[in-house]
Length: 211
Image 1 (cartoon, rainbow, N blue to C red):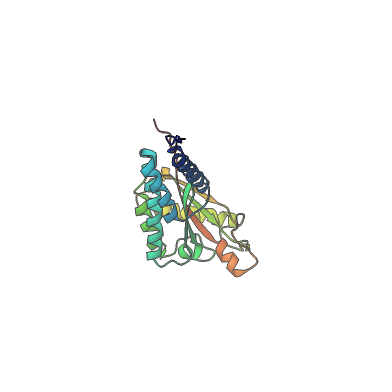
Image 2 (tube, one colour):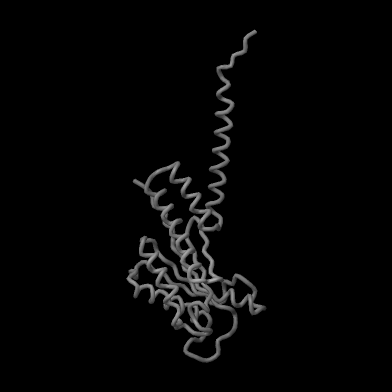
């Protein structure tokens, strides 16, 4: 008896569909995790190849910018910086000693060498920019700033002020100070306190509806 082989094409087709479903599930899960710029650029490249359009192009451009930011910071030989990407933002973390002296809200003389290249990169896009200041929990004694909250906010505004002098428009910025209330490490050790004293500069990724 002859077997009907005309439907065998459905077997590899079903396998292909299953593989694509798994791929998109992985991409969906990855979009909500923090990841390296290079990894996110690879995901954006796949999206751009499979779904052309303004949104896919914009996402790829944002990830390419994240890679350029990481390269620029590495070129400056900054060892403690971090660049991470999520579906909502590209975030650069800078330890405070890079930009400020301890307890000061005035940018250090070397801060411009770090912030000026960032301003040039940010000028390539129009995304909003969020500047967030963080401190450790060591109490401030004396001076015009009465709390770590005020210190973190003043540092954020100082960074915004410098970036504006580089030609970036004021309406792109949002500045916040969190004081010691969002630590990334323990404040019980000197190393932990150093990690908590930081500036975070985020390029906000806006997902705009097409049409």
